[in-house]
Image 1 (cartoon, helix red, strand yellow):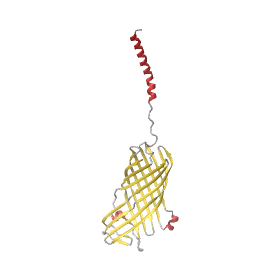
Image 2: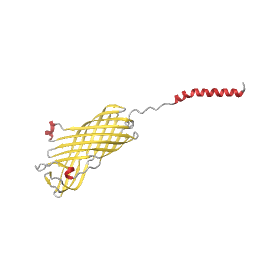
Image 3: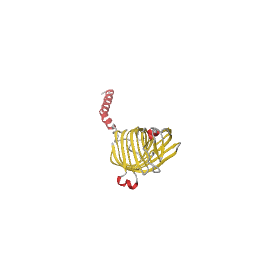
Image 4: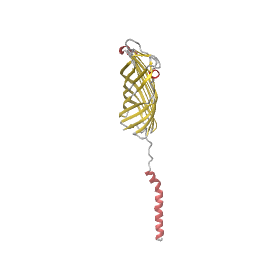
Length: 279
């Protein structure tokens, strides 16, 4: 056999062998990537979030002094308190997969300068007549501390129960030509609740949380007061990656308190947006 023909047979044999082995070699080298299991934002130890809450206030207070009963004062309509955007800060420490330590600071402050009273009322024994210019400063800020245990925990969702305490500040200050009147009170309020999260996509989650407390009627006389607290929060988070995300949500908070001389019924509700970072 001529040498050129022999070389041709050898080349063709190696080429055929290469073609036959190519699919199996490529199949052995190719490994499809598995889809991520669960949400990408659960593997963290510290999570911090800041939001801007466009809450609509409904604020009613009453204060008695010198044996003179106080009026039910609508701070929005009587004294011109206006809606404005509030900030809120949340911090979560996650020492374990099912354990979360939560802190929230919610500064709720309003001011209105020299607003002329629209309806006569009595506050701290002082009568405020229609047209009287009053500068109002109110502070209903709160700090919350809670522990949460996630009794149901799966890659795509969790459900937990929490217990904690809410420190709520009550400070109302009225300055007018007839004098300065105020009342101030800070009270710890225990709170219980539930929280849950579900992932619609590895990068997108929906959270809902509710917390509440009501002073039992059996101890109202012993502590000479009554009070309740309810908070509902639902929001969605888009996680750009495991470290950074954006949030959009809606929240409603209701606080009622009644003491020997003072009482208040406070409601805040509205949408908020913000960002979250994790480590």
